[in-house]
Image (tube, rainbow, N blue to C red; front, side, top):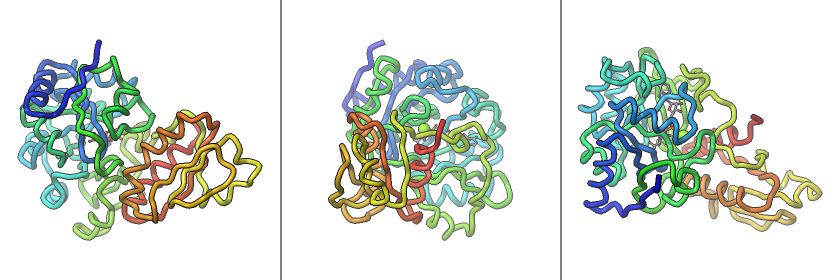
Length: 322
Ligand code: TXA
Ligand code: MG
């Protein structure tokens, strides 16, 4: 299959929507990362997502919708806690996990009784969902357990020839995936730190359960190694802790730009500590460093506040042994 790359003008979006309606696969930009979309109500289309990504069937997908009314049709019921979060943060980088309605095929939710719902803010994602006129199931558009794509080019590096089409709207804004909150009764629980800071959510609904174990222990929320470059990654407080003799032949991923000696390649996440900038550079920087001849990447920690929590969650998973 040849993968078409289209500009997301009205004609491009309409062609992509026709591919979705026809049961095909379209990679499209969201404000977080690029997603790989299919008609969420068509089980064989959803099966193609799993095949293209080499994704195990036990890992459920997020369903992308336009608004709370769409969400209410896919949930049964849509709990009050989810309604409050949706009213405050949609469209945006927040996914709510809620009891599913029978209309959602089991393959989307990996057989769970809950479904993950998100309304993206990106204008191209919204135009695509609107024009397809179906809910769009979409994981990040990468091969399973690899680095999430923040550009159409990064999508093609992993999925060229495996999907029908990519809508190329340039780099994404936030650069890490959505925050996922489980809303199934009791205190809402954080399943994945992401593009919406936990502090913003807690200031609205009070303390979240931050230690909740994912109902999908095998899914990326629970899998040890994920977001992983193709070479080993070691996480340090600061790369200044890496002894000189261990630097040669390896790469450094800095939090803030500064001169460091002895590494084969160096990337920095931020110029001077801005966490939003660091989040947007995380996956492109890892992707760049894994393409250098470096045999390992030494990354340094970022403060665990705001988007820093999402960055650290991903660095920790990238650093885990298989
Ligand atoms: O920003 C994002 O969330 C991006 C864009 C494309 O929207 N999507 C994304 O999807 O990151 P994905 O598949 O890479 O990560 C979604 C994760 C799953 O791996 C799983 O851990 C969790 O969401 N998830 C989905 N449905 C769930 C459910 N019913 N219960 C618990 N976790 C669920
Ligand atoms: Mg993913």
